[in-house]
Length: 107
Image 1 (cartoon, rainbow, N blue to C red):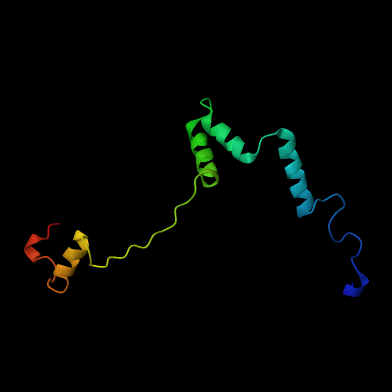
Image 2 (image 1 turned 90 degrees about the vertical axis):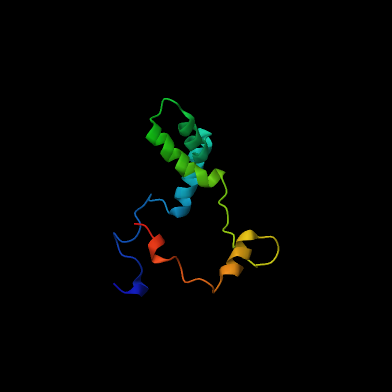
């Protein structure tokens, strides 16, 4: 079949099959009708003492990103100035050592 001729019989999406937008609307309607959003469900299961602990753990892991923010990484720079004892120690030994003597290394 030529592209100019269009879609033939039996090709394409079947009637009644939801597309992404329709499926999303249906899910939102279902959640609204139940009155419980997925996060509330996870927290409810996590706090239920009758549920087995392994399932509670899984719910806690799944809910954590929505409840607790992830900390950003922080770069630390040692300037060697001021009252930083580690920076002062690094500055004192820099270039003056070749490592530990062989007799001090233990296995």
